[in-house]
Structures are given as C-alpha cells and as structure tokens.
Length: 67
Image (cartoon, rainbow, N blue to C red; front, side):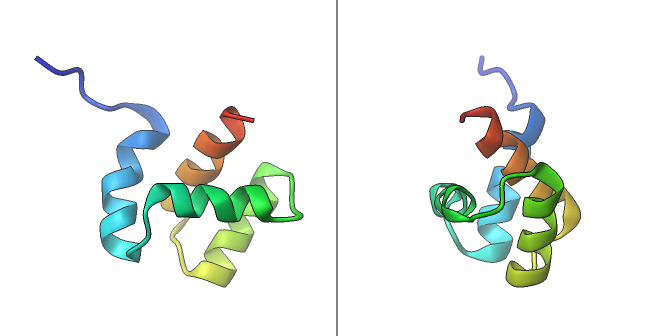
C-alpha cells in the first residue's frame, strides 16, 4: 500500500491539471526568478502566472526547501 502524498506536493496534480505545466517547469521558473523571499515569489506567481495562493505557496515552499 502506498503512503498518501502530504505537504506541498499534494497540490501538484491539481496544479498541473489546472495550469497545464509540469511541476519541474514551475520550479525552473521559481529558481530563475531574481526574487528570493517566499512571499515575494508567491505574489509573483499569482500576479504574473495566475496561480491561486495555495498553489503558488505549495510550489514556492517545495522549491525553496530543495535549495
């Protein structure tokens, strides 16, 4: 039996379905951004790419945790 996905990664299937980009592509955008602070990146994803707060927050949290 497989453990259910928890944390920010639990949003990934719905992010890919709703916004049509793979998670790796979102992570590349975040890493390439000159912004470095969590909430700056969240605001940028919301304003420039149309993500909702939860999806943007999940992507940023997961990406920054891997830095």
